[in-house]
Each structure stands twice: as C-alpha cells, then as structure tokens.
Image: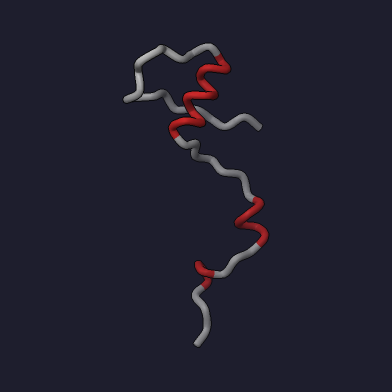
Amino acid sequence: MSQHNSFKSGTSASSSKRTVLKRFERIDLLKKRGQWKQGKIVGLPKTKPEE
C-alpha cells in the first residue's frame, strides 16, 4: 500500500518559511516594534514575520 502525498516528508516542507506566528511570537514581535499594550491579549493585530 502506498503512502498518501500529505504524509511524505520532504525537504521543501521543512525548509519553507512559516507565514503564521504563534501568540507568544506575535507578542515578542510587537514588543520589539514598540506596539505592545500591556494587558491586551485578545484581538492582537496581524503581524508579518520578520525576514
């Protein structure tokens, strides 16, 4: 039985850039940019990862 394409591990999938940041990564990025307001956890603005 062959393996489905989505289960195959390839170098392209592991080396590609992530476009979605986790919550703590977004908070760190906003702190670095000076846009972080203390206490506001819900409704964070969209951020693009640094390149």
